Image (cartoon, rainbow, N blue to C red):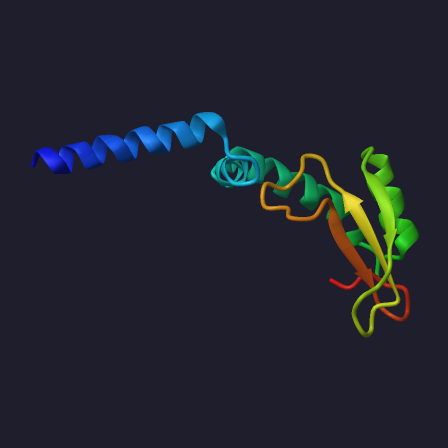
Length: 117
């Protein structure tokens, strides 16, 4: 019983040290994933952005750029990496999604220049 309690206390102490020191690249990501409020804010911002281009039959890169810049979000031109994709824009949404491994959202456009949904 004594060894069990020592093991539990050691585990709690080690876990506390990891959280307090915030191992770069590990703990901040774990804590960000637990932040449901940040995820909800990002989803709402993205949804409002998509409603600006949703009514268009063919949303072009200019339409997406205009909608992003109206919100003060940055836009970068990307090189398309997939077949059937003629253009790509990376939109830097605010707030940032907690799960992002790369900055921004990638919007892809087909051969006609329309947003791929």
